[in-house]
Length: 112
Image (cartoon, rainbow, N blue to C red):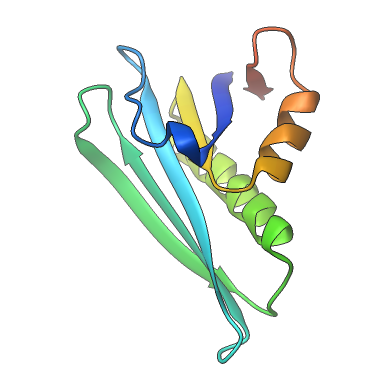
C-alpha cells in the first residue's frame, strides 16, 4: 500500500517529512512536434536527488489532460519502484482538486 499526497506546484520547494519522498511532475506541449512531454523528479527528505524519468506521447492534448496523464504515469512508476510515502506536486489546480475531491479526510490517496 502506498500513501501519497497531491498538491499544487506552489508547494514545490517544500521538503517532505522524514522518511518520505517528494516527486515534482510536469508536462510540456509542442504543437510543432504534436507531442506532450512528461517529466518526473524524485527527491528524498534531505532534498537529495533519487530518480528522474521523462517520457512523451502523441497527439497533443489539453493541458489538464496532459497533467492527469503525467500523474497517472508517475503513480505507476512509483508502484514499479515500490516507493511509499510520496508527496506529489504538479501545476494543474484542476487536476489536484479533482484528485483530492476523492480523497479521505487525511488527504491521502491509497494506491493498491
